[in-house]
Length: 122
View 1 (cartoon, rainbow, N blue to C red):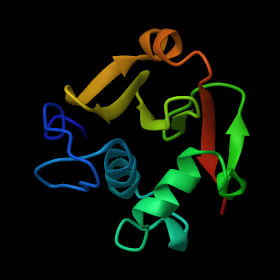
View 2: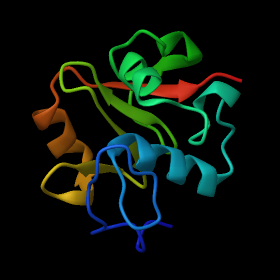
View 3: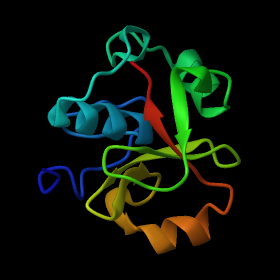
């Protein structure tokens, strides 16, 4: 489900198919998994300002926090304003300088000690 994404370059605001930012990867993987994305989180509707608000924790009411990682969860770091998508024990995310990568949960926890896990409401 992610083989064609791994290695794609990072680009601010990119939502695929040739490049992705961290939010673009989350939206793409959620779409592929058939998970409902709230209407105001659709990639074509979500502005950069709305993405920044979400990643700053201002829109987390649209999610519910989980006790730990689970497939399909959003891996979130407020300090770094960074998100990823949990899949098969890894966090798929796109980072500046690295592009789309699959990090272990342990590496994500070390890199983002303030991490939280969320699932979409609705």
